[in-house]
Length: 150
Image (cartoon, rainbow, N blue to C red; front, side, top):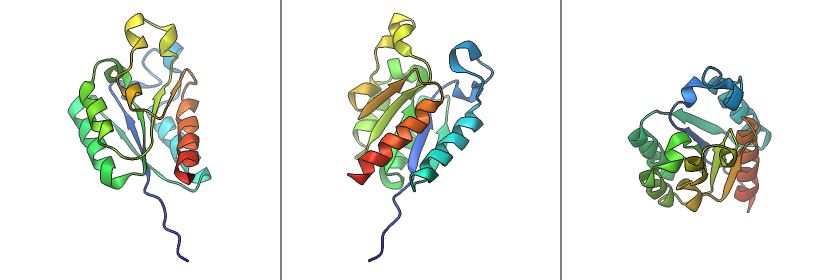
């Protein structure tokens, strides 16, 4: 019996995450987005999976990445950053995705400004991981691996 390899996990990142390690390290830490990409690839490999990695500062590009994920990915791990709190369009795109969706936030958004306490994405997410630093991405991939095993 031939076992097929699952499609990769799409790891999607929103605005300003390209500045990780430079922007507000007291909140977001010293790791860079390249470090996060390496972490995600290693966590996926440990689970026998793979990842694709994408970041954009533009809402429409994130939506297009979610649309591509509909045919190219088995799951979505998304840190929508500031779009978490504003984008019904990203929620709508995620609602059209059939696989698991895990929402990740590096900081604990619930300990921050009140406008960060609401997430549109959470209405679709199968899990939300916040406040674990960049380790949250590895936790999200571990959760995806569990969900994909059924």
